[in-house]
Amino acid sequence: MDTDLAKDYLAALLRELVDEAKHQIPVNGRLWEAADIALAMRVSTSMAYRFAALPDFPRAYRFPSTGSQQRGHGHPRWGATEVMAWWEKYRSKS
Image 1 (cartoon, rainbow, N blue to C red):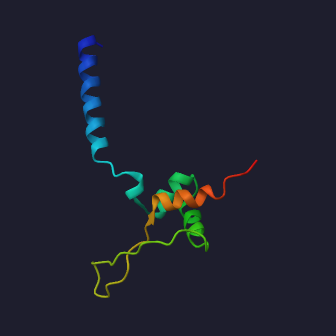
Image 2 (cartoon, rainbow, N blue to C red):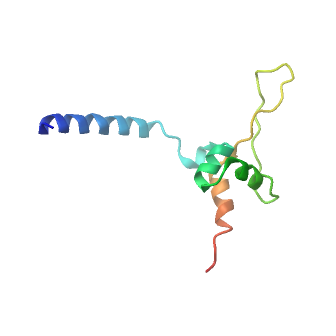
């Protein structure tokens, strides 16, 4: 690969990454769904829902749904930093 071509490619890639990073929401403002919790904890989504049912797990946000006549509640979302604080309580002491 030509050196100048490689430099141009890397510069374009870096610009894309910087632009993408500008649009990231800080973790303290993020809401996670069960799949996000599962990914962060490296467990299945069903296990994330089981954790969410525990009494000491952070309470979920449930926003109104707009797509139905009944106006139910949408899927649960949890504060990312709250979930991370929860799992830190279970860090092994040894």
